[in-house]
Length: 307
Image (cartoon, rainbow, N blue to C red; front, side, top):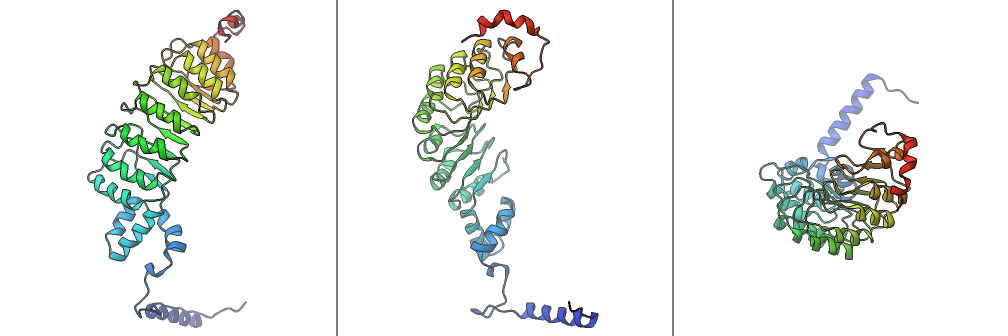
């Protein structure tokens, strides 16, 4: 391999610097810039994907070309993460996102107190065909109206999180029952307006469910757990914290029917005891410590636990 002496190396560096400083576009005769690099093949997939939304909005203000570039980058963006972002004037930025984004697959808007139906519906209208994960946990200022396009038109939906959405009604869950049977993760923790019968019917269609959170949902009873066990055989994780109406009977029915279960959260469930939890320990992660229940004595309670 040829080795350059210091003088030759310095000469080549000088030539390269001169060439870069005088390189003109063959079409316009003007010096080339970053934006002359192919957007679709290079800048968007290799550069823009690593920029935060803040970076993109700052770049958008630099020039007309930068504005067009950011608009093109947002149009192809696949994920939008704004959970917990309640900064001032974010509503105006969200309107830009709703107008520009057309290929979103993942949408995280948890705890966005500023979010309303008026802001959310245009974004959903432009992205309904591709969305597979939607997180609206603790979005207190939207209504079931925003849920309608998600339920009816998001055919690829697999993850839906609606924790602490007090606007979630039995009617909305009934609509979910009709249109969404492919969910693998579902969260309706702290949703007190949904009735027991509604949940029993709903879970009969969710045979692909693997992650389920029902924490602090008053209508969750043993009968609901039995239905979950009968139809959601692929369940791996379930959160039942604060479901005071469930007992050993329902938990036993659930765990016997779900062989893939990995974690069971039952804190603040006073009717769930070590009678049913002790045999699960070592196979299933349980969120509360054992109470030293006498395992041999459990043989006397088998009849109680049989379904």
